[in-house]
Structures are given as structure tokens and as C-alpha cells.
Length: 576
Image: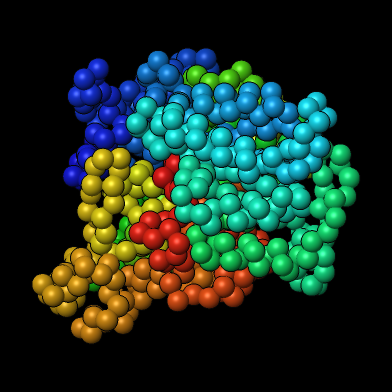
């Protein structure tokens, strides 16, 4: 087992390691990885001999930090709760019974460590008629407030912050109220919100025309709105608070692998996992930095390159691990179990991209970086499909394969309806000691809290490189620890400054280009925050939204530094 950093041990002790009734930690990190690998490898018994072999392989890939599954798997595997998935979507029906049945279901999911997405688009709009009482409906936003309060109460046993995604179609009559709902910084603290934007809406914005509203109760047209005015509302709220995000819902549904089962209407809380109602997905991430051989940091070493042979082996092991998780998972609801076992969606993604680029000597803001990203994700997606097909040969395809997009295209049988997702990896990257997801460095040094545990994170490569290149000084360290960037430091070579550019130093186009590079070869979607400096204008947000659409992204989230929710990223990001 690879030695863990002090920060990794702090995070594990605060959130992941088993505790007794007195709250004392009674498990070591090694025992945790063995607990998880042993529990997941139980699935292998159903497919022949080899449980011990795969337990050892699962243990090795996790304890080395090369691969980690989503947090609920690390927390719950081998425990009575046994719920391993991070991502869920629940339907919200247009009735009081349906609304509160969903709230009950959400409570069970949140309590088990999962994050839940809801589409409120079926709820009748504010002041619409309620035939049973003769009264007027209060609208989707009012019921979101109830869900938000319930999430506060649940608190998920203190292990994870309750996280929800609220989504509303852009053609719902209450869309403007929804867009404005988080301008009050004390509202909806347990919700990210996103607008499901259609291709037709984007065309109307470009054409400067009006578009039609639709009453979900009647299915009839409910007036029109000026598309540009609604788009400006979206831009203004996102510029102020980081919410709403946008999901390009028609593009998402064009990639829906099982359209016969229904339309995708919402995502998990961070937006990277579109799901049908009652679907779940189990995620995992590979640390790209651990596949770099040679290093830009070592001027006398070999030219850095990606070890594709090792990466290929680990992709296969990770896909098998995630598929096994579905078999041993203890689902909070029967409906979710049926949907997840029917489609067997998994999402293998990456973390450590910024670290990998530094080791390769490639600036995040470069054509070389985006080309490398596309090549790596294409490789991961191709190998993951091959492994899923291999598993289908011995275990059978996912039960809903017949009629799926793969069946209609005459493709080989697959064990999983999806295999790839790029998640944010907030705390997982701390355990693996790598940069988060596909993000650039947020800062070269910063402090953050994980529950009640406060940690300090500083870039592990910068000062090593500074000493080797001869520009290290106490003043440099002090500047970086205070400001988090190399901006304004004169003695640092420009090449090094470009290599260590932080999120707010990059242009929004750089963020979107990287997101689009990964999205091109990702089944589901990509979690990525498009950071902007405080000086950014509303027009920058508007152009970023349109660029993300043109580049083929499935959604976009922007965050302007120092906006209305000062001192923290507006959207909940710690849900991996």
C-alpha cells in the first residue's frame, strides 16, 4: 500500500473510516480498502472461481491511489447500509401524494450517502388551478423549499452534506421565478439548480424571437416569452451566484442509450450524470498523474509519456469493479434496484489532469493539452467498452440492451448502458493526493474544510521544480501561500508561470475547450466549473454559455470569483 499524505489521513478519519458508537475511529486506511475490495469481490462468486484474485486486484488498485470509487462505496461497502452509488434521479409527479412520496424516497437516498436530482418540470405552475380544492397551485419553487428543508434535517449522519439538483425546463411557465430563486443567498443551500435548455430555445435566443411556454398539467401552450430576456435572466443570476447552470437537454437525450424507457429529465447534483427517473449510477476515477513515466520535473530524465499499457489494465479492472458493485449493492428503493440492474450504468472517469499536465510539461492553456485530453479520454472510452463487451460475453448484456441504441446500431453486446463519466472528485483527490477531476489548479495553496476537519493544501510540484530550476526562495513560498498564484512574482520564468496557471487566471474559453475535449469521448457528461475573475462581465457569461453549446458540451456551470456567495464556490461540488 502506498503511504498516504497527512491530508489524506485526516479526510479518511473524518469521513470514511469506520467508527464505534463513541465516534472513535476503529479502522485503518488499509483495512478500509480491504473492507471495500472484499465486499465488492463477493460478486465474483456468481461468475465462477476467482473471488480472492479479484479482491487482491481491487485492493491493489485502490490502495495505490490509481483508482478510487465514489464516496458511498468507500463509506458503505461491508456495512449494514451497503449502498454504493453516488448518483440518483427521482421523478416528481404533479400531485401532493407524488411530491411527498418522492421526498420520502429522497430522504432514504440522502441518508445512505447518495445525491439526488429532481425534474420539477411536471409540476403545474404557480396560480394554476387545483381541481380537488378549487384553490391555486403554489408552483415548483415552493416545493423545492420543502425539499431543501428536509435535506437540512437529514444531514446524512454527518458523513456527507446533503446534495440535490433541481431542474426545470426552459419552457415551464415558472421558469423566471426558478432562475431567480437562488439570488437570495440564504435560499436553497442544499440545492444546485439547472435549467434544461432546448435546441429550440437556443435558436430563439440567436434569432431574437419569442418561444412558447407549455403548461405541464394540460400539455397546452401557456403563452410566450422573449427568449433573449429569459437568457439574460439566466446570465444575470449565474453571474451573481453561480446558479443556475445550464443542461442542454436535447443533446443529453440524443445520447440516451435506452430511449424506449423514457426521456432523461434531470442529473445528479453536479450535473455529470444524466439519468432516467429512478436510475442510479456508480462512479469511479483514475488518477492520470500516476500513469506518467518520466517527468518534466527531472531535466535529466527520459521524455515524459503516458504508460498506456498500465492504464489499459487498470481501466479493465476498474470497469469490472464498478460492474461488480451493482451486483452487491443494497438499494434504498425497489424501483431504483430494478432500473439500475436493468441498465447497469457505470461511470469511469479521471482525476489528476492538472498534475499530469505539469509532469508532462504541458500548460493547461494549450492546444497540446486539449489534444492530449481527447486522446486519453478516447482511449479510456474505447477500452471501457471493450471490457464491458467482454463481461457481457460471460455475464450477459444489460437486460435492457434489446431496443437500446447499441442494439439498433448492430453493435456488440455490452454489460453496461454507459461506462464513462467525468466527476468532480472533491475529497477523493485529497485521498489520492492529486488535482481534482479535470480542473486546473484552483490555487497553488489554499485551505479548506472537510466536515469539521481543516486542511491546508499546497502544490506538491511547484517548490520541487523551483529548487531544481534555481528560482526558489522564502519570498516565493510566502507569496504562494498567501496569494495562491505565481502572478506578480518576477523571478519565476514565464514558462513555469504558464505551467502553473490557476483557474481564475485562465480565460473561460480555456475551461470550455477542456470540457469539450473530454465530453467528445464521454458517454454521460463532464463535471467542470468555468471559473471567471471577479471583473468578468455579464457578457462573458453569455458568451461562455453559447460557446459551451457550440462546442458540444452537455451543460455548463460558471462561477465568478467574489460573487454574491462570497468566500465559497456557489454550487455544491463535494458530492463524488
